[in-house]
Image (cartoon, rainbow, N blue to C red; front, side):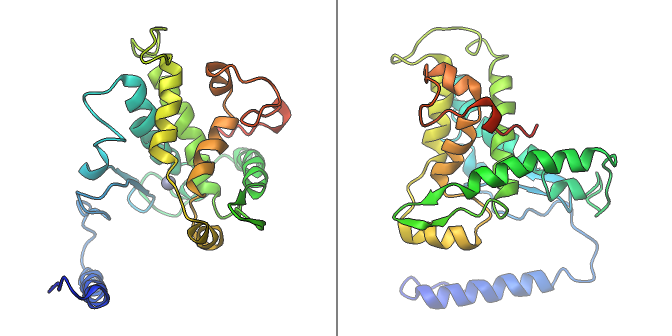
Length: 250
Ligand SMILES: [Zn+2]
């Protein structure tokens, strides 16, 4: 593959050709279970239901997601939530349809699936209510972002429970004026709450299965009572919800 620093469009075409040819080359051969869908330096992670596999490339295992030099609160609040998120993909609206071998096969007890779907209806409704910046008539599509939003809700809960088992999670020693729980929640906001231009938000609302980043922070945290407790949020404040409107999937 030949890359030319002065020809971005040409590079895109060459790279796409390379990837398509690479995909074609796998046809008719045995499945290579060691092959990743991302490169090692990529700052991202995924769960692949067809392989029942979770991948965290080296690129995401660095700040602000993870560092050996920060507190447990910060690591659990950032990469910890990501890890919980990916685990949950194995059990979300799509992952739940695949069995442990990655085959499309319903393994759920008959009475469990409708209960799961009823719980997820709450998430659909809640995310339908989030509007994008600068356009009051365009909102997030709750059904489109359902899998990712279940992942964030579940990931937050799993990571918080894991954090509470650490020495720091059980202490109340403040650092820089913040309690351990506050550091955990701030870490999630700093890692996940990236800035997105209104134009990009418009595009995301129409086709991206991920909600706009700020709702990946506000959404799960507003459903999570330990967040309100950590910052002494009063009932009725913007990032709290009455019990009846709180979504709990797992
Ligand atoms: Zn995801």
